[in-house]
Image 1 (cartoon, rainbow, N blue to C red):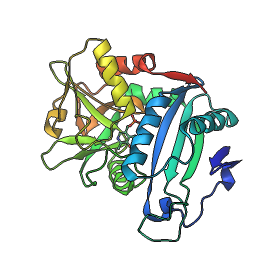
Image 2 (cartoon, rainbow, N blue to C red; image 1 turned 90 degrees about the vertical axis):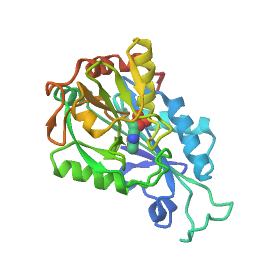
Image 3 (cartoon, rainbow, N blue to C red; image 1 turned 30 degrees about the vertical axis):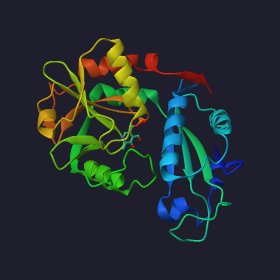
Length: 285
Ligand code: PLP
């Protein structure tokens, strides 16, 4: 495998950043994950728009021109011969002697790009079974709309889920509402058949997959409601599912051990999963 690190393509096994990279010391950086599907990069412009926004919010410069980042993404996919998989892009504020204050202007941001193959067949097997989620108290900072590499709360939430038989954690805020998953956005389908997901301005990462699914929901003429929903409402839902570039539309069949709907992936989630790529922007890698 090959990785791109600050201007060089290197063997993945040898890919390294300096110990004084601010990503390493302060989690002072942001990232993106894009899907590669059948040799195509899924929604790269939307992901790079969000990267731009994350960088802007933290006042980190682009490490190089956006077009150069696109070029590197394509190169890393090609050099790793990834047909189905994920590309990871990380930008940090750069390497400087440890000090909380921003480094001098001449410190360049660091960039790392990696790509790995994934198995659509294995993911499909999972989707046909559905996953279990486990609730967890929302304990993150209020700026979860920025896709930072500071993921310790997400690590702890997901580990808690795993140790309790789940694949994903659902954060529950002080009002008893579901914010999102540890690495996914959360959805339910009500008994009346309406899709519900929390509004994007409100304590969640603005998932690209979430946005695509919302486009799809509108195109299909399905009823939807962007509003907070509670854990109690989710227990009673007809269906539940999560969305992310890494899982696409993934049905949820159990929450905190309780069976959702009839215990099998729902028809709405299944259909949205099938249609998903028809609503995406696909570019040749
Ligand atoms: N929410 C969180 C906390 C995430 O980390 C992610 C993705 O990693 C998502 C939601 C889903 O975002 P996207 O659909 O852009 O992958």
